[in-house]
Image (cartoon, rainbow, N blue to C red; front, side, top):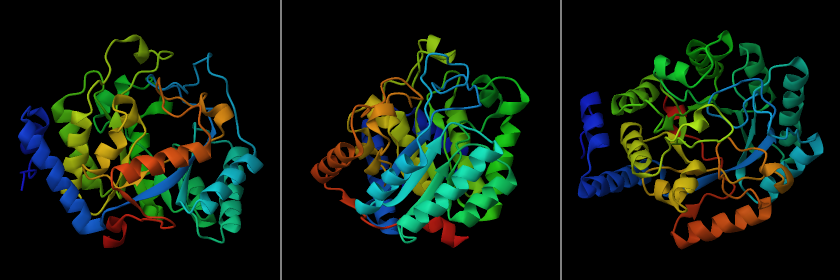
Length: 347
């Protein structure tokens, strides 16, 4: 078994250019996943309900300071129609994702949507939220309404690096993000986080510490992917970008060895770097994919990074393409299953 017992050993793996060692790492991670969780991949139908955001993160195309993006907000009927598609398609779960807002009107609307999704699916659809930092009371209300998973990416466990990719104001404090993650876990959510891999100024030590942060915090699910530029952002003016998926796959594989029973997503960003990036991540230890169900008319307006794949497709085309790709790779889909992270029940 490859040594991952210390920060130094993790850094050494991340730095290594040995192809044979990389292949052994990927193989071991896949075997560990199959032994602990089986060989299925679980689907979370993604609904990007709005690109309106109060935050101004320096890397994100949805940032409030981006005047070039056309803002949209799906109606309740459009969101519920997408949820019905997920239910009819036997996805098992869906994700409601949006830019960050905290107004009482918005919070109450989300609460009602969660209840409506439970009603139309007879309680069978699992609900994941990815709606940013909120108050403890908001998180609790959404949990009690029926959401049971929440994804809030830390982006970097290094407070200094975090401050470099977010504006220096009280609206973007690393401590706030950490506090929100603690709130989610204390309420009882299956708690997810994630990081960007290949950020400007990021070191192998940073990445190793990210993995150790995820393990020590006791995270239940992780969505991480390569850093990709958006041209309409301050960071997008820099030439730096991720061009190789190897480092991301190493991070997925090492995390799988470190935390055999969590859920790890094969993220859409991986497809930008490699057209079969998500499938490669599945064979490196990932076990979740989030096919997009957002209306084709507005998909192009929800781009955190440039060149997001599938923005011209509708939900049915997205589903068909994903099924075909997974079938070609010999990957089994857990139809109709929530696919909850076993680590959550180990607590």
